[in-house]
Image (tube, rainbow, N blue to C red; front, side, top):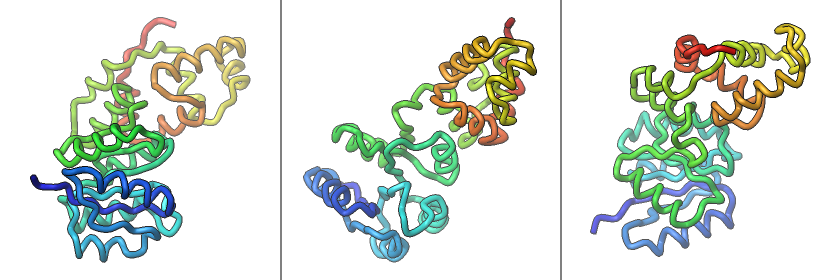
Length: 230
C-alpha cells in the first residue's frame, strides 16, 4: 500500500512529538521529517517532496502565510494542511486563497485529525468543522473555484435593516451610534446584530467587520443579497 508522505512543521515540541507518535502508528502514513523552528522547511521540501505538509498556522519564527505561498509556488503538488486552535475566518480565507487544502483544529479528536489528512491526500478540501455548510465556506469556494455567486446569495437572506447594520458595523459604528443613525433603540440594534451573527455563522462584531472587508467576493455577494422586509 502506498503511504502518504508527511512533513510536519510544529514549533511546540510536546505537540510535535505527540502528533508524530500518532501518525507513525498509521499503516498508510509515513512522517518523512518533523521540523520545529520553521527555518529548514524549504530544504526539507526539496529533499523529501512530501505529499502532505502539516503546518502550524502560528509559527513564531516566520510568517506561515508567506511560507504557504512559497511552498505552493515551488511544490504545487504538495497538499498543505494548517493546524491551529481556533482559526479566524479571515485567516481561513487567506490561507485557502494561498493554496491550503485543509485545516485541522489542534483540539480535534484523533480520528478527525487522521480523516482530514486522508481526505486532503485524496484531493478533497477540508474546512474547520464550525464553518462547514456556512455562508463563509461557500464564499471561500466561490473565491477559489470561481463558483457562481448565486450559491452564496441563496444561502443567506438579509433584511434591508440587517444589511444597513452590517455596513455601519464595518464602518466602525457602535450599537448606540447605529441606533441613533437608524432611529432605532439600542435593544433593537443588538437584536439585529445577534441575527446577523447567527446567519453568517460568526461570533463577534469584529468578525462581522472583517467578514465585510475580507474580499471582493464577499462584496459581490453582499451587493446582490436578497433584501426582505424589515
